[in-house]
Length: 95
Image 1 (cartoon, rainbow, N blue to C red):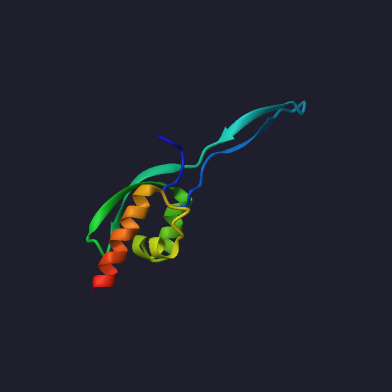
Image 2 (cartoon, rainbow, N blue to C red):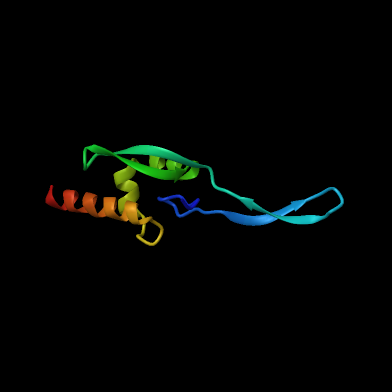
């Protein structure tokens, strides 16, 4: 399983450990990913996603999963999140 947020697309970053003697060695910065179940108001069910904590804050700031998915471009979203966005779009169009 790759270490990429399904909502924001945030992934790993590469940098250096720098010692007191200024020696540099490569290291990896991983995002803080959490397995969460986010509730969709339109679908009336929970959706399991692997999301970064920053992504969770963004979802809450935008008023829930439905609003976040409808505002976000498909290029940032994972395949699973794109499918959910499509389902929500159909539900909202029918209502």
